[in-house]
Length: 168
Image (cartoon, rainbow, N blue to C red; front, side, top):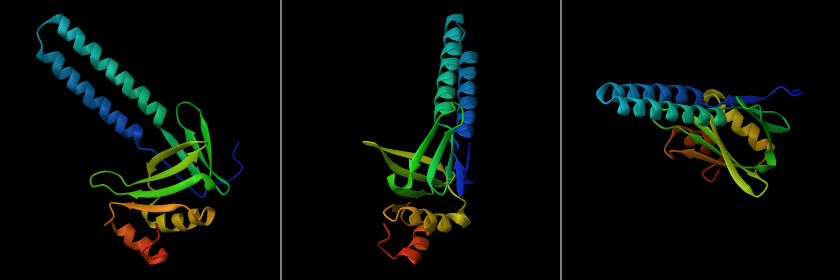
């Protein structure tokens, strides 16, 4: 039961990427199926295609999540397996802004989970609210290292205006 309303939230885009990858695999498998004459090769093509699609679906289901930034902690709710992970702000070591061409903008948080260093990538907090989000999350843990990739991205300039050249 949720007691706090999340201040910021996001999701992964792995489901849409998984659907696209499944379609590509099916088209490729159908192409191989129609190109071969031997019935055994056709059966092998169908079997390999369905095995790959099944593995891809399993992989996507395990990685799809929603991330909620609440006042006290970060909550990661995995969409298909019902698991929930709680991350304290004090455990977050880095917040990364990733803007690659021809792909959606992503954020990545790196955090400590016991003796393990883990990371989660998710769709970026809305561009217009990203600076507010950075200020808010830095108020929760001032030791979070901020990173922008690529380093010549405009967001790097925006963060330098607020935190100076050595904001990282």
